[in-house]
Image 1 (tube, one colour):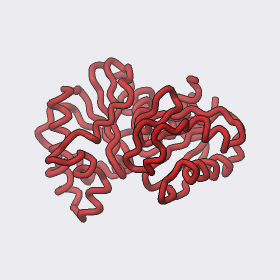
Image 2 (image 1 turned 180 degrees about the vertical axis):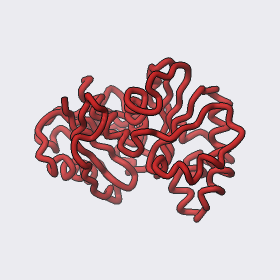
Image 3 (image 1 turned 90 degrees about the horizontal axis):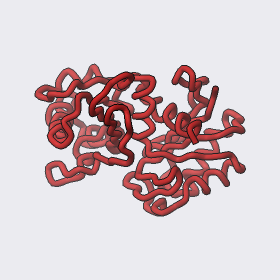
Image 4 (image 1 turned 45 degrees about the horizontal axis):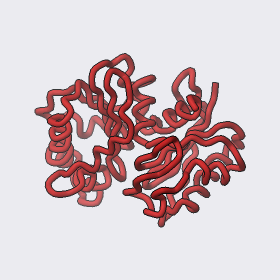
Amino acid sequence: MQIFGVDIGGSGIKGAPVDLDKGDLAQERHKVLTPHPATPEAVADGVKQVVDHFGWTGPVGVTFPGVVTDGATIRTAANVDHSWIDTDARALLGERLGGLPVTVVNDADAAGVAEMNFGAGRGRRGTVILLTFGTGIGSAVFVDGVLVPNTELGHLELDGHDAEKRASSKAREDHDMTWEHWAVHRVRTYLAHVEMLFSPELFIIGGGVSRKSHKFLPSIEGIKAEIVPAQLQNNAGIVGAAMRAAGH
């Protein structure tokens, strides 16, 4: 069974049909740049470009980098235009896609669902936390395999700032930090704070940095929880979005 998944990020909008039996992309993903400003109308145009690239005519799952309620309504928008807040994204995207059925889900929640079913979290019990490091930091918290939605742990306070302003991949690039410096002085501090609050058995590190985990994970010491890279890497959000669309 195939369902289309789209992952809206701070820098790119990417998507592809997903083979839900395998938990993997059925075709190579297509990506367009996220518009700036990332207004609802402009982002909806980007999503349409990605879906139209494949000539897709079925259900579509779409991730969003913020709190999403009822598979439709946007409640926060830290890394896109604030005009998204209170937007019915399901209705907007459905209209832009010519009436296709659309399901919208928090981006990290989608990635977490994919990793728990097909990736690094498969079969794991207890508390598992997936953290995506990209333009911001997304989070997905699972207790015995059950998702606690919209946790948004990237906005915990760290050194007097939003954690994602200190420890995201964008922060590393903006401040020209080496991978080791970022891992030791930013990511480790953030993981220690999250571990103090939740005492997870497992951290799964996702987002674009997951494919470069060898550059920074070995430098992170002093964390009791096991730390592993996401197995689906940066495709996890696309897969999870499709899974959610299939569920709805």
